[in-house]
Image (spheres, rainbow, N blue to C red):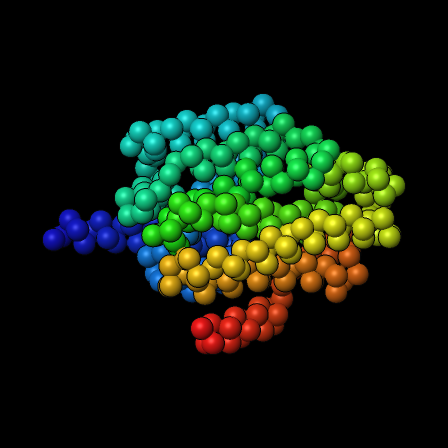
Length: 294
């Protein structure tokens, strides 16, 4: 009994460590997924912390050699985890508990690291398909990671919609972070073919030029993301009853970022567009009303 109590206390601390990471780095996700039952919320925090670890390993490395080394280390750590020899670290210990409690697959975790490798070997995508393929690896994979937690009975049949939701969220990230990505890390995620078609150059992007061609590009990607958000709502009923509300809330809050950019006249260069706390509370009330009618 004493050993059980100590273990329980230890894993709670590991989950608390992961919770602090999501609270610091993604207030929107935390706002939505903290509405899950405690055990499910903790599992989501652990998965987010892993993804953050992967993302930071690339962004914090100062040279290509350091980025390659960081990815090699993470791949080795994940392989050891797969073999049951995980590191003695809060994130890995929490993930082990998640894998013990849910019908998890390791493949999306490797796909996430592949997404980080795509950033390491970054080239501007040429087509919209290439943008969406990239979006699968960095975000659609997260949807697959979360599925066994929030759709315990139906996760195998919901893989395609979960990937689509992740892609919608990543397209939203790309549209929100256009200026930051270009100026700070010299990456352009907008498809080159679309930029060429409307006559908008990378140089215009570096200048932060918001003109009609820019808006055409932005809206074409935004409309695609919004359609994916909308399509996802048709399968919401297949998720666990205790997870439907947080999942609906997270998708609507994320879609709200697109509205914020529009309200700020498409300025993705001089301000950080986000769903404000007031807007989140309005969305929360809206989703509550929708669920009260079910």
